[in-house]
Length: 548
Ligand SMILES: Cc1ncc(C[n+]2csc(CCOP(=O)(O)OP(=O)(O)O)c2C)c(N)n1
Ligand SMILES: [Mg+2]
Image (spheres, rainbow, N blue to C red):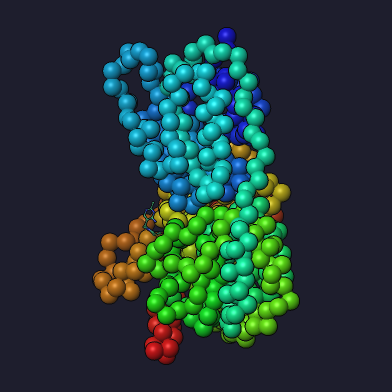
């Protein structure tokens, strides 16, 4: 007998779903049975939160919705952080949860939580499926909504009885090709006029510039207009950071070296900026003119209120803008003279032989061990600021960091997903000792899947980033330190390799050896976070004072 669950799985296959991450409960067993006979791989995880991070990362890397699955109540609640991660980070994903039967209730309210209501503020769409006949339509709509700009999560709840009910013989609704509207000529003309009049223009790439399909058109735009660019944290890699037009990345909102260029600019063309990110710069009453380019209009914020907009499919719209600008921009390179100074300051102390290692040295050595197309997945902690500032990206989506929900615990799950999507590339998770332990159980998943991936743990025995803020705010050093397991023994208990870096020059070699060894490898490096205050507060504070 064909059941609701079979229609669901057929619809997922029709959407091109390759794998589903999750932990089934008894309410999902009909779906599990349907998956058994399908081409879709079930990637079992050890926590639903990790499954949702993996699905979101699949969406982020491919542009196609990642799918995760859980049971009702407790399992579904565990998906919630991952839904918020996808919503704030604009990552396409579909979350499928089970539920008690809706036609009969033999268990009263046991495990019953209103998950659709819980998911509503965390998703673009949340819906219960109430009849098998609606499944093909609902699934197609879910994927359409998840994928369309601005991408994000969609939640579908499939109750146990609807999953098991006899279903009509319905074919899935096939996806159709989508062409998006291009910016109107009037907007392009206005923007071109403003850019042609600018004396010191800059381009900024934001989070939405990292959509997988945009890398070629964005590089082409920069090549044609030759205006120097910087990026937001999540815009890193959208255009090659090795380009001689790269001016830096905004890890802070103001007063970093890259702001020396931003503060002097009279026009900034922001491409794909999403105000979900911590502001890359602060707009004020004086400041530069800002033109917002994106698939979505700019939301007006206290710190971001563009003066003009180019709204439409970003690639073709920028090609039309470049047609109006190419060869006519006499001032394109006006701010380029600042570039060497900015980049030299940012990389100071990156080869210093201090032990424990400085964050600058760690970023430098990681870059040595990871090829251009290698993917580094950051968990959330103090090191994120250093990687955003110092790590040079050459390929889109090769530094996966979360400057949106900024949740801890996503580093390892994101790396597992990246290793599944790109088994041919080197993949590295970089985690603090705090964030790693929030989803470290996924080491078992990585080992079971025979993945090649390296996890780098920065050990300071503390929630370092909060400790830094505590010190910067002149509070006493209290309440933020912890002990750690023996990470090497911990790795080995999972059947993974483990190594501890014991001197300043050991990190690069240890990482290289870990990648060469293959399999799942844990590398632990002690970090000296005194650089946080010295650079980010004292040195940059002096810069601000000098600027007056
Ligand atoms: C799930 C979650 N809990 C708490 C926070 C707040 N927070 C941000 S960074 C941080 C400390 C991170 O510690 P660790 O992972 O050890 O990295 P470190 O800063 O020490 O390098 C905390 C508690 C968060 N962002 N996410
Ligand atoms: Mg720490």
